[in-house]
Image (cartoon, rainbow, N blue to C red; front, side):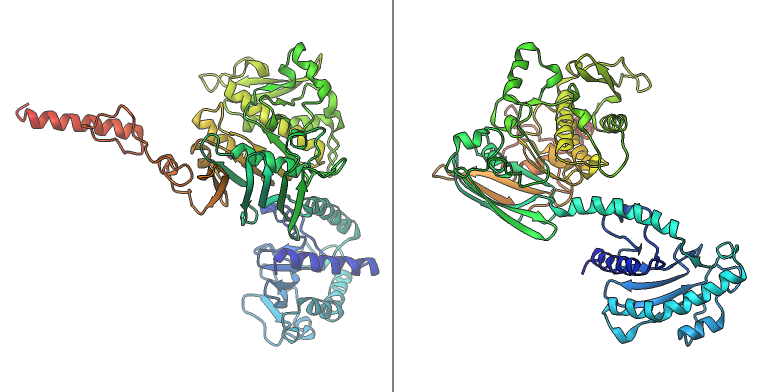
Length: 561
């Protein structure tokens, strides 16, 4: 059993008790430290136990409640009373005696194990509420009467106030909605079987690991990587993307997807001949990108803007099936439709959120400003100068270097597409699947690695399935990534093999010569066979040893020099 399941079971039970008895209150977690609220840890505790308390007041040293009912992951449960940092004994010997404590601990943390109920923690909790809780309530009531204004200041305990409890529930409610949206359907692809899609006759891929967020497809030009992405895209959009090319050109295809959900793997089959008119996508969020990603709406001139009548910027799969994909930006007033669900965020708040994220994501950009323009909105980019202290004058998208444009256009388009599909308070809460063909194209090696790192950190709940011809992006691959090599067999059929390989400690040369790329010959064509190959990991080291070898040879030839 997962600790989050115990949290949910206990929380549901306690809320039912609260609905029955309006004076029944309990403590909930209020801070999302270590993303525990996002994980569904509604009550106090750690990764191995749940802490249920019905009273305010905590120990200063351990930061845990004075009195609480503990449920461990193995089902063991016990009452814990903590008086470790009290100025003087707050709990009396009569109090412990009524609760059935036979011997008190010297460290002032006393525990009463509920042995008779074994690992049935819910029965143990119900027994505690029906029995020992009333004894503690009576003790607290007596203390309240004797020192009404000093209960917590004396490092003791007190009842939970109704207003405080309602505030706690509002925080929990917010994170429960976020948690439910994340858990309802992640849409991660765990397996696929593609049949009769273009040059793919029958291709099966299974056992993509649970929670795998990055899938890299490699293979030589013409091996079929793009065909796989197109087949996955056609299936995910249920063959329904406003006249998409898959429906028009691949009528006989059959794609089965195994999709990860909160309850396990769900298998969906999509056929080219089926009518999927108005049917929803198979994943909660989706976007797909071809290799050309340099044009955005704001950079189009009048002649190209005429294509808008075909809604090319609206179709999720357009860029993957066409040589040029027109990416969306902020030069359109549709951003007014943004209505984040879980927080009161104005449009300006949302745009500021985008600005701050772009400043972190984009290389060599110090500051980003979204400003009003004649066409709606435009983005001003402040590039970093040669002197880090000096920031250059702002420029528009067209004046950015092509690599930065590729980076910026992709991020903006992804942000805006997912904003229309999901209402979230933070872009890190977007869930779904993104397909990118040739993710390394147009990018300097530094940015080939950085784009993986930034996408992984900015969108931690999205699964990316990408193709690449370079080992550099894999240097940024997060743990649990999957590598699939695509190739053609002797009969020219497209095949794919999932590689069981750990690249965490491999350098680019090792990755290139691994089964990921099968590049067996890395030696320069103009290599002088009389010279030793420089195999040092660092260029400066290679230069140093080359000079050292030359000096040694000169010394051997002329030993008296």
